[in-house]
Length: 325
Image 1 (cartoon, rainbow, N blue to C red):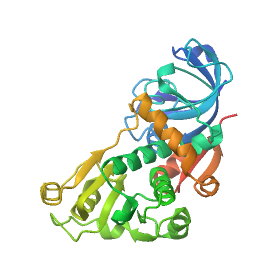
Image 2: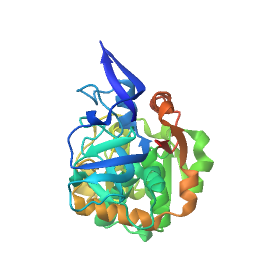
Image 3: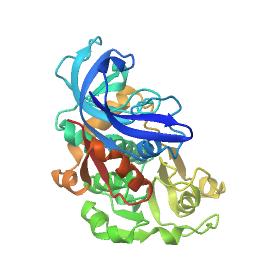
């Protein structure tokens, strides 16, 4: 099978597509022919070696994939069935989706819901799944479409792009915050009503600022998240799922105790199965067909290393789909 294999040479990570024996696959009770994967921020860190994502080598990266079951010891999955996988440490400490075949635990798989094919599932991928979890967190926090504007930070990335499309399709008024002014037309095509520049959000905020947002999806963290919290409406909810701008949070308790603001963390790696299934089933029925053309570009397995470097340089917009077969 062909696989993107990461190996360590001294302090450097070497990423090369190689032909390897499928007998080298790690233990698992379900074997899947991988047809599609995607390239995420965490994958880019692993492939370039710029983040301590992979600690055991050799490793096949790829934190998500969609494919067809080849063999299964898990009674829930049958040969020929289409499945999708995100998270669970796959591509980090268990060989992942940037290969023609994967062997994993059946506990990590979700049957592909009606309305999604494998290609669409990976256009969504981990980013789309995370975006859906964020929207669900806003709903559970009581944020409704008629409550006011919802802000999406890191709007040009995979999670941000998909969150805009989901929120817009559900009837929310969405404002996009992006560091790339050139993406205005793209973000509006996804459903954003207004585009703000990230440059206006880099200063340290006051403890409380003018109330602007009924809800927010934040992929950035650090000072930007602090400012978003200071601008939340009374009883607003922020779903935080990323740290592209840093892992610290220099804020105060003021938004929480004076405006009843909720900060809800969103983890997509160890999400329980029932919630995974709910998220994927909702994704299958929400997004218009136009989204799958607007929000993605397709690459080959061989192009993954160069694209990973471009992603970390903030040169990639939306989702990157990897055609495996």
